Length: 300
Image 1 (tube, rainbow, N blue to C red):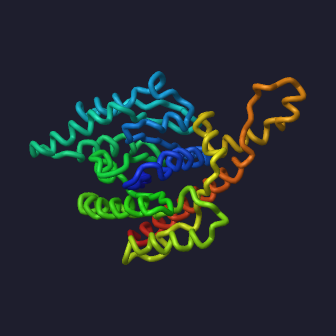
Image 2: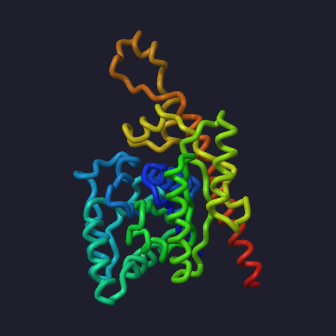
Image 3: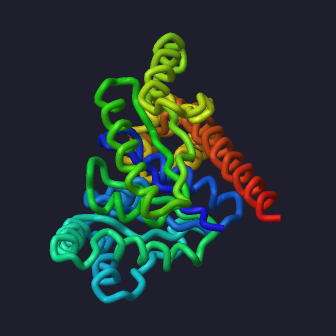
């Protein structure tokens, strides 16, 4: 089964990277073999896993070489147990230029990137791809290889505009990759107490996705937990890892009493964020399992 999930939105800053990394980490913790592909020239997947972009990653150089030569990209093994990563970064801008040149010269385009992703993805149970925002040709390449598209969205109008962009590109990609399906849209960075805002945002999303069943909007969402979200990047820990660290850490006043003024202090709100990602992962896996069961029944 192709279980490649492209996490995408036409707008930046809506939680694509955090979503891809946290879902991948939870999936790997369940025992599945997981690959994360950073398809964004910003390369921020490295930060979420606690790696230094410039010193500890190739910034997309191996993916560039793989597409140019027809080989496979280098994989950093065991970034977490059962979880490998192909790094992104500034070298992917060079890859985008190459793909655009191929397209303009009539020698294809994003398809070369799609084929490289498909070749490496076949070795894993699940693949999560962090997509660049906007109309990037790299996003096209990911859509050409993926089975599912998962879209994080915020409640602002800019995020909804990004959703429109994704919907247009999804339609084009579906002609090239007819197996591509929209797994769902979920709200990211919202206040759990803002029920009216959530209700209105869900309605706005359904307007943008006219013709689709309201089940396309997931029931789970990722709340805005500023301190815990900051700690994720600062400490290079995923939400469930941050939660475990918070549970093990002594309260700040005990640390101060013991003279540990520089000891680790973790936001207690990390448990809320970890719970949100856990619920999102459960819903994502349930949807994939249900779709696969339906497909198996149809084939039989």
